[in-house]
Length: 107
Ligand code: FES
Image (tube, rainbow, N blue to C red; front, side, top):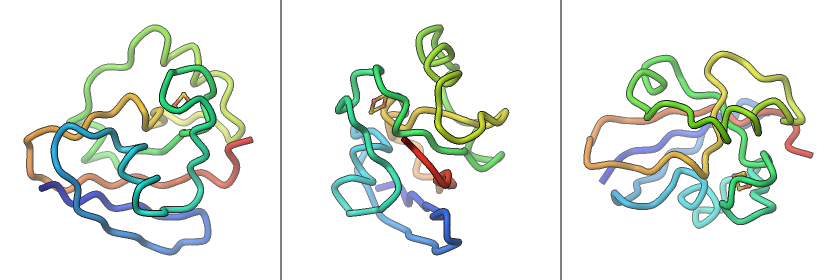
């Protein structure tokens, strides 16, 4: 199990445990973590699952694909160097904590 931490736009912190194989977006949605809309259901077509990865987490994430990179240019909140689309981040077997800040707006 991996401990996934979310810092919500209001500063509230939520920590959940999730098994490998699910995406960060799916983990957030199934635990009612607010602030991720995921309008397209994870099909890389909406950019409403935007998160900011903590620098330590960002270093352990897979590279951004060309399509994710294009979609990150259409996020409602500003794109930062650590911006990612949470539907593209599959939780792996690495048990290290992951931390993401959820931006203020997704739409
Ligand atoms: Fe739509 Fe991630 S859920 S791009």
